[in-house]
Image (cartoon, rainbow, N blue to C red; front, side, top):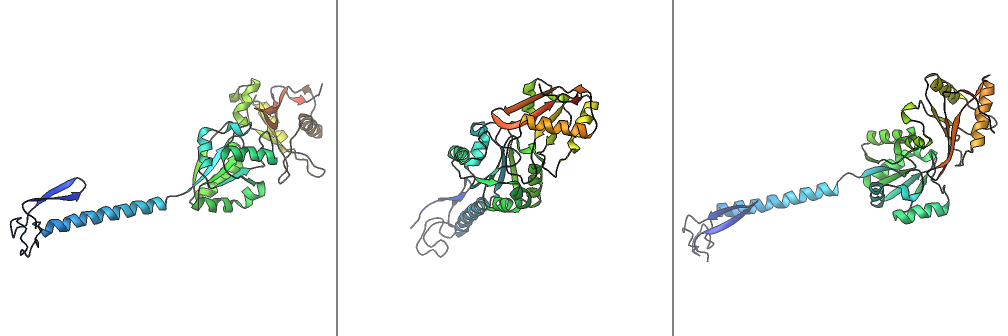
Length: 301
């Protein structure tokens, strides 16, 4: 049998003193109002209601947590080896369920060898799936659909936005309602400053693809010419034909192709000054930096 005043916990630090108005809080067993508790039923009801609301609030929050949107992380790896990833990028990789390695716009210093991939996998603690150009450009929905239900990492050599393909991947993800987080890193677009030429004095960047017997494009040559007319340097990045297996362009190869195009266009004149850098930041990728203020043939000494 309850007696006297009873303090009722209503939740949220709210308390009230309850006393049965029928038995004046005595808690008589014969009281038909409080049935011996001494507590006014009105307050009992409010106490139970408060507990129910707290329980519903807990369930709602749990449901929101369970339904939290997953993320597609596009992570720059830098220009050298596995140690160039940022701390933020490493933390993102380690919490992802699936990890893809983009393997056609650029390569790390160890290429795509089994030992090289093992080095990455050992550091990240995750298996890595190779994503070639066909997969990224034509089967990107497979990657994006995975990001709907789990965190997915898409690894890119250099910076994620160093290639237009990666920008397109972000746009497609947004169209499908997939959240994207980008982790930036060093890129050739700023590392080129190592040659001493000011970054503000560069014009449009061009890519020099490998020639084949029946495919010898020269459209990029006009961009070099236009940069020169504007008094700007040109960054020429060694590239390759679409879907071609990864391989490195040598300095001699790039210069030979430039000379061939120059002859085709009927150009002649001064020797063009240039910087040729291989393994930039220990990276096995060829970069040719043409100083466009002097324009003409390239001659090998």
